[in-house]
Structures are given as C-alpha cells and as structure tokens.
Image (cartoon, rainbow, N blue to C red):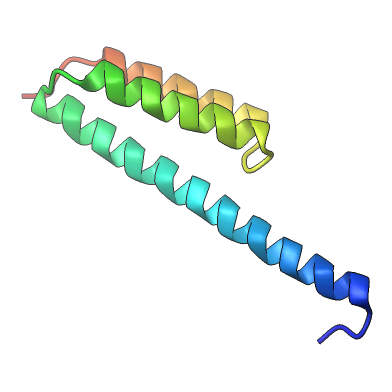
Length: 88
C-alpha cells in the first residue's frame, strides 16, 4: 500500500477509471450481442439498436476507454450488421 497521499488518491482514481472502462466495454459487447440476435430474428428495431450502440461507442472513444480506430472498426461492424438481411 502506498504511503504518499497523492499516490493513495491516484490509486482511487485508477480504480474508478478501471470500473468505468469495464462498464463501457461490457455494455458494448452486450449491445453487439443483442443487435446480432435482433438481426437474426428479423426484428424491426434494428436501426434503433444500431444507433444506440454507435452512440455508446462514440462516447467510449471520446472518454478514452477505447482507441478511435477501435471505435471506427466497431461502428463499421454495427453498420454491416444493421444492413444485413435476416439469415432465416
């Protein structure tokens, strides 16, 4: 454990950031799964789910949770899924 006050603060900040990053990454994965399931089922709210996921990806990139190129790649994947026809 740190003895220096600033380092103790830094440890707390790092933990908060780690939890935020984990929340963003986990939610992005969950929304990807839901979008994929909606497309496969032929749901009619694909555009809404895609827009919500793209917004979350943009926010994560803006806050530095994911790299901007990673965000662009994920958004391209969202667009490809949203444009896909149902596999049924």
